[in-house]
Image (cartoon, rainbow, N blue to C red; front, side, top):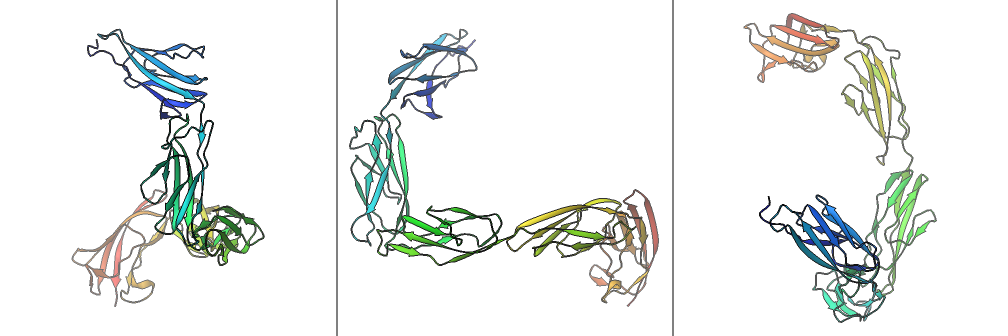
Length: 444
């Protein structure tokens, strides 16, 4: 039993926002914010509706109702739980439905000379019934100065410096059923208009060029895309469907500035064809333990990335690769052009590997060439453990990496010319295991 008793608290939500005022027709969602009841009775007191009340049961503590006429409607919520000491509790909320809506809007123009930073803002809001007061509107001029509350009349404001400002007009008067309503516009201030823009200078067909307007001042715009097409948008996006180089420029117009009009320098955009990735390889059909040589047949590319399908990669134009296991590997070539556009091709490369193993018996460290380092050689080596000992049984080199060899040093010191022994434990990629021992002569 709930000895604490039941409580009720109702909240009205319009279009997802907590509110009790709106324009007809108005749909309101009511919610018991305490949600302690087992049963909820919602009485709308709406004489224009055929639905007088609704009943819901926990956990459903919410209901919607649509008002189709103007007026003030007190909703009553009765929250019930017979297991509590007070059994029920009541809460009220009043919904006001009107038809006097308003659409906020404004314009602006520069006062005084073309060098001036002083502007007048004209309220062009339109209301069903324009019964404005001296406090109906709030102006935010976007320059961190205090907001100004005003009536419908024009408002003047002086800016401290040139720049781009976001000006906001807010209708803050609950006489209007859709308040608050907002109008937002960009104001670009400069004594002289200066046309400027940025955009990437290259792309691939079809290239969607996105232009960022960096102009100072300006109210109107003419973009010339270098192929006869134009736009008057502030920041257009334009699609180039043909390869070539296009000289783009922007004309910025602002009759309130001293120079009225300015034209940017030409900016070249180069549109490339998408590259085509293609390759072949030899030997095909495969030969046992053969080195695979890839031939690059790509067109329109200048940079490449190979993925051989076994975890190894290369950026060479036409690489060679030694596979280590029998199977079919998905080799992929990524071909990039100067605009960083990419095409790829994946082909199945069949490989045959016959396991084999060999260790050279002599090497000459400190010299150039293949014999400067001693390495395990073989095919199909999966895992290995290789240790080299001096004549006193001390391990001078150990590795499990088949690509790593001994350079004739131990702890950074050159080792003496001598005969060294080794043990080599290998498991091949086909599952075979082998232990090999032998001698290596270090020659100088």
